[in-house]
Length: 115
Image (cartoon, rainbow, N blue to C red; front, side, top):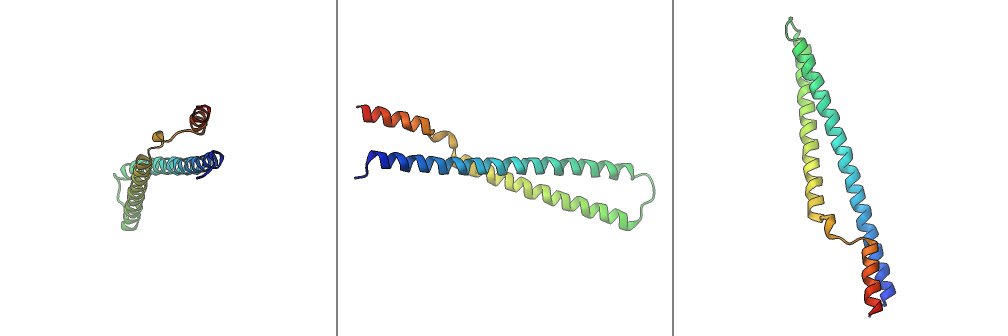
């Protein structure tokens, strides 16, 4: 049977690992959200450029380049949205609110050891 001190160290190590993973996931999620916001702004800017240039004659190369850029941006937004959904799924499946903090575990162990 393992000693209580070793169990406490194991729990402490596991909690640190979980906390690090959650922080890493949160950081990645923030980065993805920022990238998605930037891509959205870029899409809006390109849309405005397309609408501003809509009155005159366009050369076909310019029109196809804008269309290609727009399609590429749409693809990037779709990919980012997929990644955000995946990160959301991971966070929802982990459900960090179900985990105890290190201080809570220490309190519980102190209470058990006092009894």
